Amino acid sequence: MLIGRGKQLIEPRKNFTIRLSEEERRQAEHDARASNMKASDYVRYLIAHAGKADASFAYDRRDLIRQISGLCNNYNQMTKTANGCGYVFDSTMKDANHLMEQIKEKMKELADKWR
Image (cartoon, rainbow, N blue to C red; front, side, top):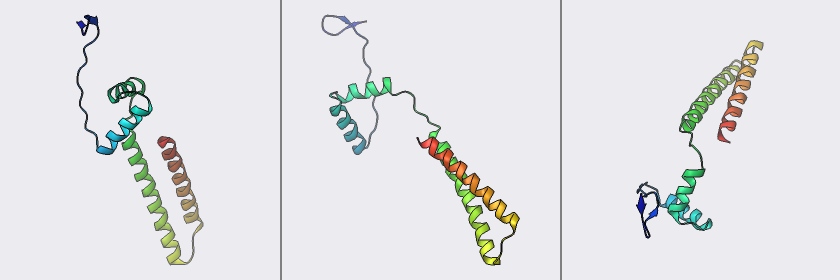
């Protein structure tokens, strides 16, 4: 399609409106200025070069945090029971150690997802 001065072969642009908080808008404008670009050029560059956003990330992270919380709750219950009785069975200690290993694994998984 021929548009613009001198009827150049340029693809017509369409408007695309997004809602930003005041802080997000200031950050985008600051980053654009730091890159010596207009805000619209900067946003187009980000869209073209930034890749795809992982929409499942927040849900995965929330699920991992819920699992860790549940494991920690179980561990605390075992500790409270052991403190109340004044003694601990070997099986309880093995279960507690197993829970701690699960907590460590989930924490590592969570840390890897946040990177």
